[in-house]
Image 1 (cartoon, rainbow, N blue to C red):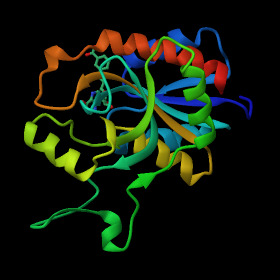
Image 2 (tube, protein in one colour):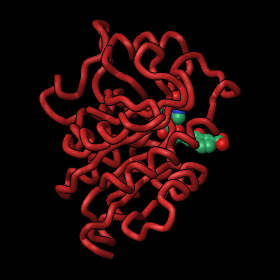
Image 3 (tube, rainbow, N blue to C red):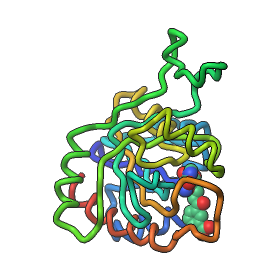
Image 4 (cartoon, rainbow, N blue to C red):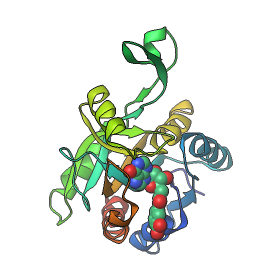
Length: 215
Ligand SMILES: O=C(O)c1cccc(C(=O)CC[C@H]2O[C@@H](n3cnc4c(=O)[nH]cnc43)[C@H](O)[C@@H]2O)c1
């Protein structure tokens, strides 16, 4: 393992296969399973980082997109990763953990590579945008929760379940990180049959080809 190696954490085997197909034969990149949810992802990433020497950490996978901010089949690169349900629920509404005077619910990924990938992507056929990505332990599946999240995080472009965990593990040891998600479904009332997983996995594969050139 070399110091310029890149660790890519993803949730499930189908995502890993799409990413590996995009990378082709590239020995700098190591794709590992993070499991599902922020806790699994943080632990899995910390363990991988303890075994090797990495220059960069990426969280990649599919995600739900907020209708007005991202479309199915497009790519969202995180400007911020927000652990959206870390806080306190009161009669006046939800307050972030920071309002209690401790804790952290937002991470800012490495801006240099976010910019590089966005610039690179603007010359491709893939629709790519930068926006906030929420990390949640529970997939949003009702209209009411969707409205709540949009009210709390009006700038959110997507939600997934691992980004903050991966980013936190990397940030604790001072390694730059980034989250890149392909939108498979709209955030809203649960309709699993409407998820366009094949399209999202194809976008993930194509984006990984760019990442291998940019990083
Ligand atoms: O069933 C399949 O063939 C299949 C193939 C690839 C991936 C999956 C997953 O279910 C991946 C789970 C992973 O996806 C993220 N995700 C996707 N949509 C959402 C969403 O609307 N809200 C939150 N997370 C979402 C999440 O990070 C999961 O870990 C299935």
